[in-house]
Amino acid sequence: MRKLAVLLVLIPFFSSLAQITFQKNYGTYLHEQSRAVKQTSDGGYILVGDQSTGGMNPDIYVVKTDAFGDTNWTRIYKRTYSSIARAVLETSDGFLVAGSDVVTIAPARCDFFLMKIDHQGDTVWTRTYGGSNDEQAFDLKAAPDGGYILCGQAEEAGGRMSYWLVKTSISGDSVWAEKYGLGPDDRLYGKSVQATSDGGYIIVGYVDDTTVGTSADYIYLVKTGVGGTVDWTKSIDLPGSELAYGIQEVSDGFVIVGHSNTLGTGGWEIFLMKTDNLGSELWTRTYGGLSDERAYRIEKMADNGFLICGMTRSMGAGSSDYYLIRTDSQGDTLWTRTFGGTSTDEALDAHPTDDGGYVIAGYSQSYTAGWADFFLVKTNAEGLVPIVQTREPEVIQSFRLYQNYPNPFNPTTAISFQLSASSFVTLKVYDVTGREVANLVSERLTTGKHKYSWNASGLASGIYYYQLKAGEYEARRKLLLLK
Image 1 (tube, rainbow, N blue to C red):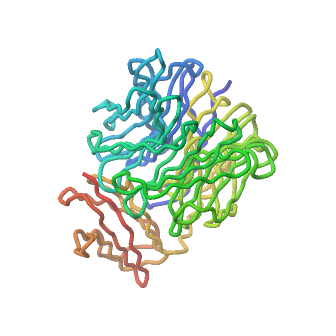
Image 2: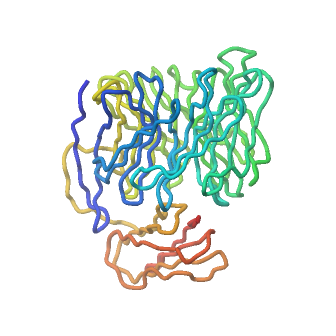
Image 3: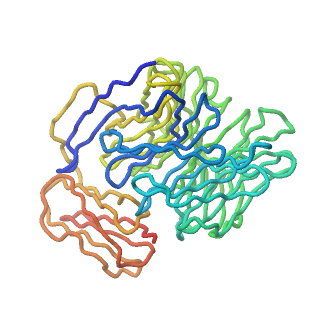
């Protein structure tokens, strides 16, 4: 095993910032596996996952870095037995970490787990949600009406499994919880939840119908209303097994990512599926080679394309490598990238970053001080970690208004935009009635990228809109204040 050499590449971005690329690992002589990553409001990153001895009896492990990937702090959170962190969100005063907490060992049983920590990693509170059987949480999102939504699965009598949603308040108290099941022999594995434009939720995962053997896995969608009541459900059963891990809402339906053992040309192959607003399949694309690929996360991009992350055994340098796929809105490949060494490396989460690049997290057995380490990759806009340093000036060819970050926020968020020509600029914030609540910019600005902070501490929770005018260019975006 070897430690990873680090390379930083700086490409001009905002006048006060630079695009940074690197590959870094974090860990000890034990086994560390990062399962989620988020860029933080200070420009750095927070990674959550678990630390264990050979994969046994894990504890929650959290790493906070700066923008260059250098460690700010690490924390290990030990529970009565063991816990795994699978999702993280930043709040105005810290972070929320969600996953599964082992609450009994005879028999082994988990509950949903939610922990609030401050910006230094100190625990503020913890919550568990569950009954007398096994419940495991795999996803955490901010709820559009305030609080948070956790998604996973709950065991029923006789070993049957159901999807389970838990809605909480901002302080982590349970508001409601709903289960969504099928037949007495079906085991449902809930992997991802997204808030939908109508205020409800869409859940995706897969079903194992134990009556017909292990090849019977198929995609299952549940669409709910605001309070978790079912709007509709949809089974998508293709030949072989399809394991769905991520979903995004688009203007005319949904896109689902996962992997299948019959689609494509290899063994297990990544698929991207587009459905209509009721979950009926419209088209499916596949990605991979002659061996196995897996997909675990999808993110919708500003150009309506998609970012997919997972692992590949068909390409790359080792037995498996990080696999990053960038597509257009129709699922056609724009580019693919692999990262890793000669051993096993697997990406479990990826997101776009403020500077137009991407951050990917998972675990590495190629670059480790022990059995496996957290492995963080920060790329440029082309998904590359360049070998040669470049300081060529960036040419701004268009006007653009970026999505604020963080969003949802409380009470401070950053709004960024770029100008392709010197212009008189106004940047204003409005409430849903059209009333102006903030005037952030009203002056001539130079060509380039600009970033402004807005503090909404005097306003009530809710949806707001910010509007940029620069010459003939005009753009508007939505932001969500949650207190």
